[in-house]
Length: 76
Image (tube, rainbow, N blue to C red; front, side, top):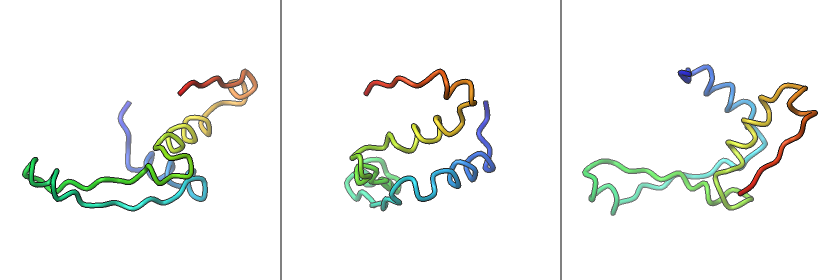
């Protein structure tokens, strides 16, 4: 399944006000090591301390009514 720019925009709209907008930080050390501009997205600054809320929310918001009624079990 190919992800389109419209898919990304729709996901961003669903995430609005659901997760913290975290900053990015250029890594001088990694940039020098790789010979490229490396920028890190600081998802550890989410309220949960991890990147997981984005993926979980997108997945759960796309469930059908039948899937929601069946329930969700997750392990981390």
